[in-house]
Length: 95
Image 1 (cartoon, one colour):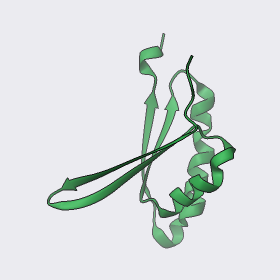
Image 2: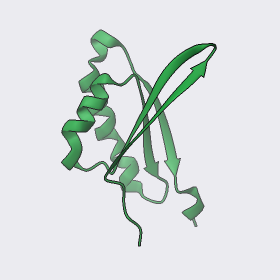
Image 3: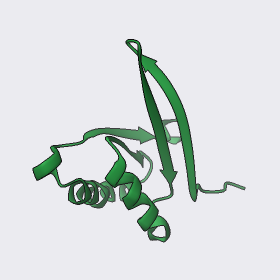
Image 4: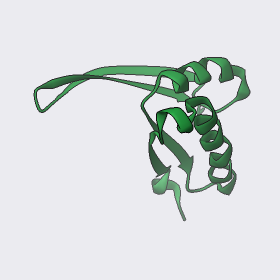
């Protein structure tokens, strides 16, 4: 049986051009149950990966809400536009 992600955090240090960077990925199911924790990660984050299922139009439509939340929390008037990446997953399930 498939068990949907509730929340997982992945941490890795990477070196690029001789400089160390800390990478943290917060993987959530997108439920409101963890919205406070997610908001804290957004506040402290510098870049974001928004993932949707290409087999579900609803998950793509939900991205507007996540994007608006990121923009609101990051206050782009002060900090500028954060780096964003859009990823469509589950291509192996597409008919």
